[in-house]
Length: 503
Image (cartoon, rainbow, N blue to C red; front, side, top):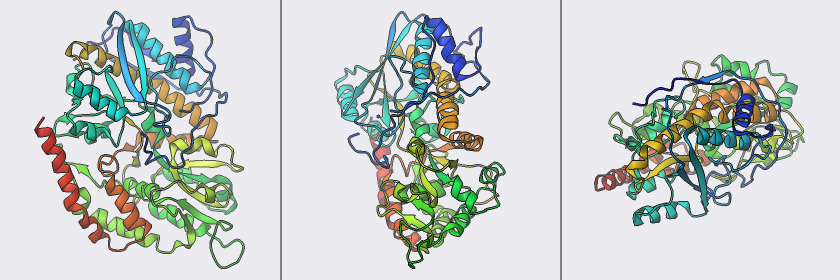
């Protein structure tokens, strides 16, 4: 158990943190601006665009108090070497753990100040190397027994492949890390494990997973002009934002504007969607998972035995049989159909948090909403996150380095929760892109309800097949389609378990 520090660290806002870091390190005043960032395959990059705009933004004051419970330690210049993707290899999420200089970009400078602050505290150095072929580099170096990195940031859909290859060290080898703390994602703890073996984790320094949260954007101007009575933000706050409410409003919005008797891009839609995002929002939002983890820590094909989930999927198909009210992407696993949203006569679009910046120059105000609940009786909101990075440990990690690595990771995660995450969430998103306080509340709900599904990440073919064969085709035979993949998924899961048992 880690010894507790005598003195707690108190930060009152992202601005206060950056100014504190500047005074500690003898740096100049920290300027505040926005942020943008980086597998040869890009399965979850909706439109292959990168965020590059920087703009001065006023900080939002927030109270924060944390004690990471780490001991004071002089690490005598110890280097924490992080392996990450290049911008070319992964350009659709906020991925970097280290920044080497201040740029005037708000998140960049928060990361820079955090790392220099931790380096100064422990007399350590944080380094990050970028690689175009990270998975093969990781596997080859660890297999050879001579990795030049201590941890790696791995695309969430690839983590289990490394685990099966026998190149990962489990997280119980880091004595100073407490994964039960609020700065570690608890759903990730439950998902990225086999039995008692935790093979990956997600700390709050993993801003990529926040940036890949699924959500709905809506055209506030259009909503207002249509005269709807409901305040959408208040519906969310009151727990009344449900699937039926979303679809009811969207259907009421649809209109053949040019009167030609057909719906096309010249008409008004209630929703623009690509199946892999829209239906995943609805399934996860209802609290369901395609593949879940049992009490024994073993994954299983949950959808096959979950009659309620199968019934809900059937209900979703029935809800969308009439295609006149929504614009459907021609590719079920393709890009977000912004060609329907951008002109200003589509109310909702299913998308990801990473896409927020590209809507900033639209000619109408935009709001943000979480995935809806199945019904009002459901207690919590759930937000799927996919396409970001998780942290893994190579088997080559020296036992003598474990304590230092654990301390640094715990400090990075704790510090990030109260500095870098607010810089991303409260300043960059809430004030700069989401143009009202209501969207700021929605972002809090989205980030606080992040959920993982092994049927979307590790065995992502489940989501891909359902998106294509059930939801895109509006196939009413959900039972048969679900049953079709039961044996193959169970076999794949068993193959994973067997490989791990042989290690």
